[in-house]
Picture 1 (cartoon, one colour):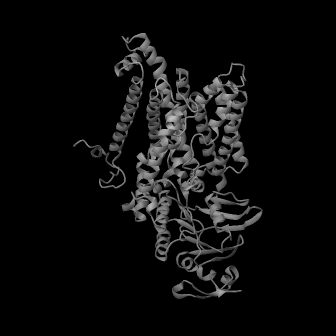
Picture 2 (cartoon, rainbow over the protein chains, first blue to last red):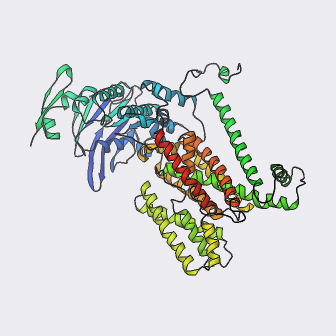
Picture 3 (tube, one colour):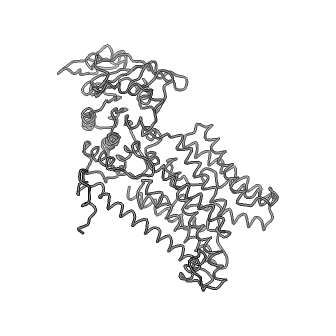
Length: 264
Length: 365
């Protein structure tokens, strides 16, 4: 069991027995999640298993039908939305806009929850934006138009925007979809090196095994397995959850999945 | 060159790197901003003064200044009483109302386009103008209110009723932005039909002409009351919208992204829809439905200064004001002594300009 409080005794972001229905169907059913501060938690599961819904509950964009999401012990529902956005940043699967924005414009959006109405950006705002650009290697491209970027670059810009929020919790919903393998690895390297608590929904089991400290597997809105990658990613679990035959080997301490075919 | 503001950075704070690709130093920015504000005010003042001199009566810019100064109590004027009347009672309020309407419509358009994430949204998309026209014809043609209610008052009430209907409808349909647009379009159709129905069945030729002129947008009847009323609403609305400038920026990637950035989406939408609807209602009540300014000028302003609302909103307001001042001057002089409704001219000029803007942004993208 990993520690669930940081050095200051803060509990960070926690979901306790959260449920959520959509159109009368239970999409999340009593899920617990308590990522250890600073760790990277991977959410796995087939489409429609509730990964995105769980992330939206954690971000406070959706409210749970039952159960509670807490930030350092306080229910998210009782907190100011701006205060939440200063702590928790979200990167969507694929963000797009019709507005003519530059990379810099997008990254500056990360300062929205920190800024007051009618006042210009502070030196601290500017510094946070600069640091986010540097960390993501985008300083030289600050003036480039969003619409000229490739999918991988756009996700990098969204991560820079999330960093400009100066969050302690970062939530990512399948951020590597639509990316080629090099950009997938780059992005995951970037994200897992950040000094924040990260919850990331992923499709690729091998990437999840490589980059995550803890995996949580969902099926039909329930947690069916959780723990370190090598405890979780077993041939039995993959067969049960995905309906896929696979062999799992464990070179260098990280499991590796080789798919053999569907079960049926 | 020795007194560059960067040299005065107080000790203990980090000076911004001189090679920063992002922004010049704070002092330079403030100075530049101040210069822009002064330049903008000068452009608007010159446009208003210049527009007043154009027309059948021969009036010079000097006359305009001296009349205005005299009425503000800064000395006396040697301009004849007739010319004084033309400037102070006719052309000045009309030109100022043009500026206020242009500014207001452009601000409404900029806000609605960002809020509804729809580049075709304009101040009338909420059904405000069609509701106003129904209110106006009901008062003028059917004589409801027994003459005690004026056309602008009828228009204002009609605009608010129509907007309330749109809000109610979009709320009951789920409240998403495309529902707001659809509800607005539905209300527009309904109230346009009602207006036509009332005009066709009850109005005589003379009344029809008068109502039609107003429906197409006209600044001909402008008086000082209109100017002050619209200016007051504009100032308040612009202040509120500027307060929401960052929030509007956050809508670029959609409502969910805005919510994740700490924006209370429902509250923001309600406040800004109400503010823009009120402003539009006030403008339409005074000047009729002047089309195209709210649709096109925000795009032109975006092409000039980019999408950030803290800059976009004031620039759109200025562009709209200058644009409508000159278009109205054209409308009242081009077929002299006949007057063309200003809304007709805005569309005739606006459509080619719009196409040009679209073409340019297509090439840039």
